[in-house]
Image (cartoon, rainbow, N blue to C red; front, side):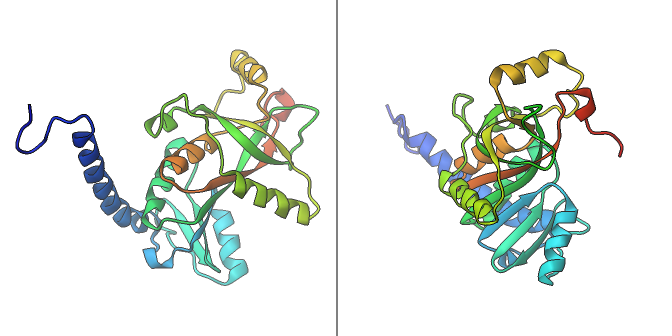
Amino acid sequence: MESNDFPLHPQYVPDEIHELEKAAKARIVKDWLPRYTGMPLEKFGEYILLVNFGGYVKTFADQNDVPVYGSDRPMQAATADNITIINFGIGSPNAGLVIDLLEAVQPKSVLFLGKCGGLKTGKNHVGDLILPIAAVRGEGTSDDYLPPALPALPAFALQKAISTTIRDYERDYWTGVVYTTNKRVWEHREDFKQRLRDLRCIAIDMETATIFVAAFKNRMPAGALLLVSDMPMTTEGIKTEA
């Protein structure tokens, strides 16, 4: 039995709704990307660097003699040589948001330059580079993009290019699985620390898994390069006010 408007075919209604939703989202993100960053769409480059701190955007802008957009907005951005750097803030919801917004410009690749806590005491040290080969989806935000059973993986061609570049500069790096969490203050919880040990994760952060999954959902090649900023598995390694 069919109605005049929607034949009762298993795929017909979902596909039509999907196309309507896709068009509605396109309209939203084309408005919201400039709203959040203060940067006009035509100023965005084809290659995106995502960072957590405004100081990185300022340094990028100063080195390339370009303006910083969005000083009065939630996100700051600057573009030079077809590369746009964006400070999207901290945490998985912001990570998912910026990936969604970037659909407005359809970048050729997205690279997250983030910080992480090193989990391999005696092996990792502050200042080490981590090139994630995957991320544990412990944050929950990525569940709104794809089912939990799907692994959070980077675009491996992009990770390979990052690896080659690091080697060109004669630097070393670690590879491994990063645990992405929603909870920032967990260092006092021994049960959570044991879970991290059981999973054999090399580092912990709050964005990587979300970026990988949201980018995959939105058909954007995405990768990550993380800097170890603390060693939180021991009392001495936890960040302090200094």
